Image (cartoon, rainbow, N blue to C red; front, side):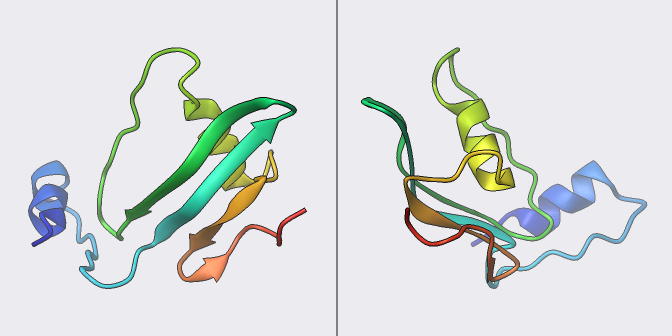
Amino acid sequence: MSDAPEVAEAVAPHREIETSVGEALLRTDGLTVKFGGLTALDDVSFEIRRGEILGLIGPNGAGKTTLFNAITGVYRPTSGSVFFDGKPLTAGPR
């Protein structure tokens, strides 16, 4: 069971935040980014549902910025897909 409604209410009780236990708002499937022989991201998959607040933590060099850049289109993933509100954000494989 998702805690999204409770989290949204705790964070912003004065605002109406639509939460959903249905389809993900942002989803990555098998996201991989390689720079030559270096694999920066390897098969990253996750979902964020509407109303959820999540964080991404890790040490320097873990791939946090590379993941952000792959999601936003700065980098083209070597493989995998990014979807926003059910629509693909990534082009097909190279």
